[in-house]
Length: 104
Image 1 (cartoon, rainbow, N blue to C red):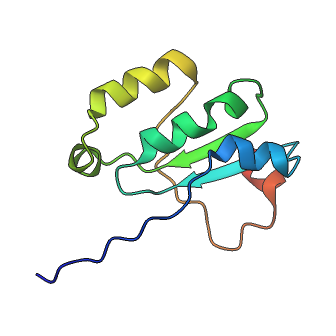
Image 2: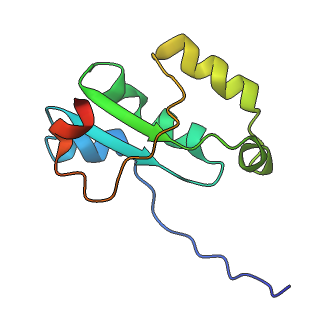
């Protein structure tokens, strides 16, 4: 297996980006970060906790979480303590026309 080059990149919390751009109204997020979902959620928490007009689609893959040192059960407890969440087995089809269709 080849050695991967490590690159340092600047990081910003998603909440600060949303606030800087004045994001408001119904907002849809898709998180697929190969086990870093907890970290992304924590970076959004200040924004998510003061609003109720958003939807978030997130992959839940315990093996990816474990590979990043995250306990899947702890992530579920974190979600349960803060948000209403559910397993949604259907796919969101490509070409969904707008966010109103997602919230319908």
